[in-house]
Length: 483
Image (tube, rainbow, N blue to C red; front, side):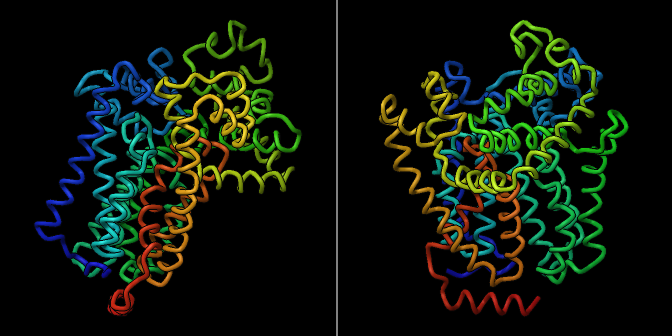
């Protein structure tokens, strides 16, 4: 299994096979979409989808990026503009239909398989490329979320585009500065779609010159940084001028306080994570951050000002600051439970099977009080017990899939260890490790959070499953020395 020489392209037969794989995958997704809609809107619409669609509609109707049309020109601070802008563009061209968003996700998720093929071929050769592409195409969670109107799919697409561009810029080429600029644009846009990369972008300025000597050029680093500062920094400047906060998004405060803080508090005090979040102000966050359309939906007919007299008059940016401060206090005040949360979150990220959430979103499974209690406690073994008694097929699939996911993670760890020997690939390894570190958390009980790391899991699982050939190692040494 030999890594492709920089700049090499597949032969005509290889390109044809790749196009066939992508065509079959796209056709399967579109057929599923056509069959499921409109009877199963959950095939496209997630509970978070409206929080992206409403700002998109406000942008179309008023020209203002606001939480919804009625609240324009109030600035939207919870969601970054990348995905709502895409939704607005699609709606402007094709009309306000869920199917449009599903088709766009199908196209981007299928293209991501092609990008993974190119990345895996560059790093591990033709066989590794086919194995990784097939694995990603067949993985049920990635296939399902390849139709859903959420940020994970466009983020992953842009992330792989940016990664390929950065690797290509580090190779002998006269277009290094242009490729660095394009890579910066792709990763900045990815950050505005889903802010996961916010802390990784400045780290790249230090990492790239270490793993690829050509990146020691000041012109290339400046070309990479320019779009990052313009797009990501520009959005922070907008938030500062419009709302008095330099945060890229206020969603990080919700994650810190209600999601992670609520989980840690539940472990420290006993009880379910959802009960802890309710005490911390879950209903208030749903209303203030745009997850529900009005007060009645959040508070069941009661007035917000009566329930939260201390915070109801606070600007959203100040409320987020309180969330952030209190979340840090909870995590720092319970270090053991915080470490336990990180461990549990890693298990959820790598081992959560897709079938329960899939059935729920498609309306095939209606949870009762017992299942909701076990899921939001969370007690995975309690969820399994419920599935065994009420959904034996889902239970069997889950029992089958968990060990397969564990094997995938172990093989990926082995592949990552092998990849540490080759300089440029350290960029990909660092990206994978960073995504795992910032994603790991209680929310990973939903397998959608595995979507951005799944291409890397597939790549390194295939690499870990096969021993590297001697000539591959030798060629890597030669390529590294030539740089």
